[in-house]
Image 1 (tube, one colour):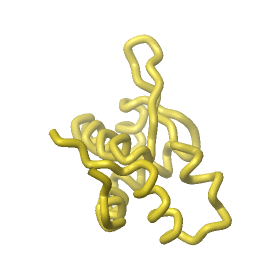
Image 2 (tube, helix red, strand yellow; image 1 turned 60 degrees about the vertical axis):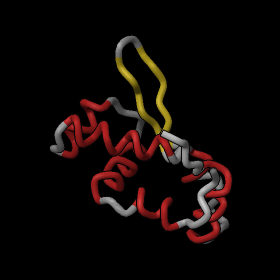
Image 3 (tube, helix red, strand yellow; image 1 turned 180 degrees about the horizontal axis):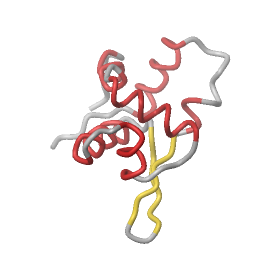
Length: 102
């Protein structure tokens, strides 16, 4: 089922830790442990936040050995600079944010 309102997308971004993660990943891709070191947050907190960010496709990851390297979804944060934030959120919700029956 598609999300009908952008507030659910904004809710994911409306968290200080998730914003810190996004800002760190805008600098360069990082592992969970690197993010923990930079934010001084526990691994469970970072993992939970990354799960939320991945669900709405704000971040992606690639496996490298036993680790996951997280990185920003550049289509969202860098390729749409000519749109205002509400247009970007509406487009993002339409294209990426689906609620799954869990």
